[in-house]
Length: 158
Image (cartoon, rainbow, N blue to C red):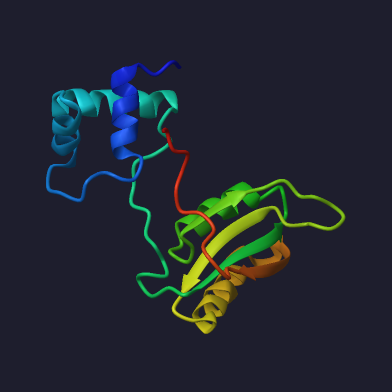
């Protein structure tokens, strides 16, 4: 999809986040000189076409006290991984999870699930509960703890 000048202006105005105001689309509209309705319609179109992947809150886990962040990686039976992944996503134990291709023989893990806690003990308790949820379909796991934030933004237009 080719972006026109207004689409690009909307992306530039929102790529660092929507304004934290009661009427963010109106503020973007005023900034670029079009109506709030046009901003919303264009953003809906860009979402539908995949130019914008999603609109949502991106919390800084460290700022809100979740300083133990671990990516749990699981070797789950392929026959049930989709169903278990959906159950895990709805469990409230993880912020997000997704399916990845295994890289044998060194990397047998196919289900990734991000776990946050105020300390490692909280993360490990959630991982224990995930292990229970996955049951015998899980053949093993590891927890890879974050040591620093490398990136919290998407692609930027200049």
